[in-house]
Image 1: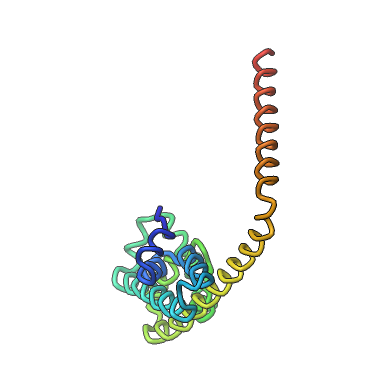
Image 2: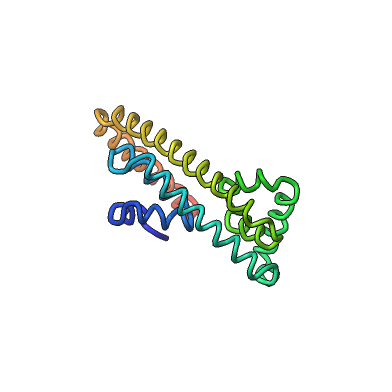
Length: 189
């Protein structure tokens, strides 16, 4: 697993681009925190994430178009996800493109499925461009709100830090003692 915060700290927008290309939300939420700390620009972050997410989905689309169903049929989990994605594509193609980044578990297979079913490339390109912007804007905006409220919460807790540490330590001791007592009783039986 990647340490996105370290990558973000050292590589900045390049890390956002790579993260959006492959995964997305984690690096965008960290990017939103960087915006909240005035390290990144809001619109630049959205633009970089949009391009990264867009190019990643385009790659999956063309992989599906080039290799087709033969790539998926020997992979049972992918095949099962392809069947679910295909139903969405056939019923609601435009909506599926717009929301595919928010459908966790189907994010990679949906663009690939559009390629496999030979969805028109130009239409996919245009809708994917719009969808990439929506996705980047929503995730960064939510990340900014989360960052803001975490800071507010942290500043409320900071004056009571010692009391909180002592309370948590006492609770841990009580739980540990209870667990040990339960084991001792169990061993005696």
